[in-house]
Structures are given as C-alpha cells and as structure tokens.
Image (cartoon, rainbow, N blue to C red; front, top):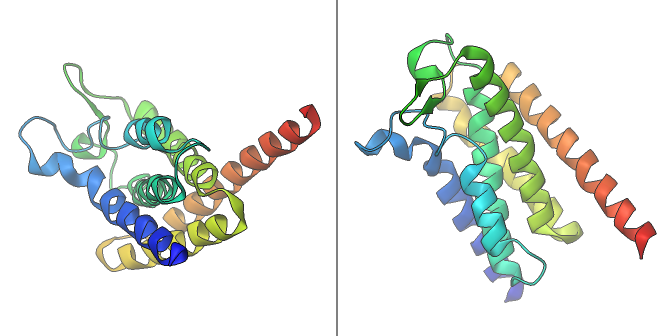
Length: 177
C-alpha cells in the first residue's frame, strides 16, 4: 500500500509539473515563458517546503515528480524554432531577456530540476522511479514537439550533471560523519 501511495504522489507531481510551465499561457498576469513558470523557481520552492528528509516520502516524491516534469519540459524549450520573442524568458517589469540569458537560465534550470528530483526521491527505488518517469514524460511529450535529438541530449546531459552533483554531495556527507 505504501508503494502505491508513493507512486500516486510521484504521478501527481508529474501531472502538475508537466502542466505548470505553460500555466503562464492561461493567465493575463504573466507572459509566456515567464521566469516564474519556466525555470527552477517553483521546483526549488517546493523542495524547500516539502523536499527535506523530514518530509514524508509521498511529499518528497510529489516534489520529485514536479521537478522532473519541469526539467523535461525545459529540455524541449531549450531548442525553440528561433530565439525570438516568446521563445525568450520573460521577466515581469523588464520584458524579454537576451538570448544568452534565456538559454543559460533554461539550461541551469534543467540541471537544478533534475537535481531536486533526485534529492527528493531518496533511495534506489525513488531514483529508479525518477528515471522511469523522466523517460515516460519525455516520450509522452514527443508527439507535440518539433525536435527529438537535441532535447534528448539536453535531458541526458542535465541528468548526468545532476547525478554527478548528487553523488558527489552524498559521498562528501559520508566522509564527514
């Protein structure tokens, strides 16, 4: 029963995370590709509130699901048809950011979101679920996207860096205790 609840929490997080970045298209308050919805801010806030080791496993897995789905979404967004207007990150009160800022923000957010997903999942079972769900979300998104290989490479590189950072931190923690 515990496993079913944890899986449902992860899937609920994936559902929310999959839809969250484009929430800005359904509101008059934000422009599309707002820095608020297209990046690491919401997953980082969720991680701060629900992702700690003291939080129950379903809460952590919900955070992992949101973070991994946002990371996959951003992997596709890193390769728009052109870096112009709505492909750029929008800052409220500032406007559209330069291409280099937008690219770096999205790339950094991919790594941070995958890192949050791995740290929130905790343990081999949670980590396996993160990898499986990342693959599923990526595959589910594919029919509506115009590119495959570049976003796939971005996701793999993002996961690779996140795994390296997470394992480095875990190994350092082991030596300090």
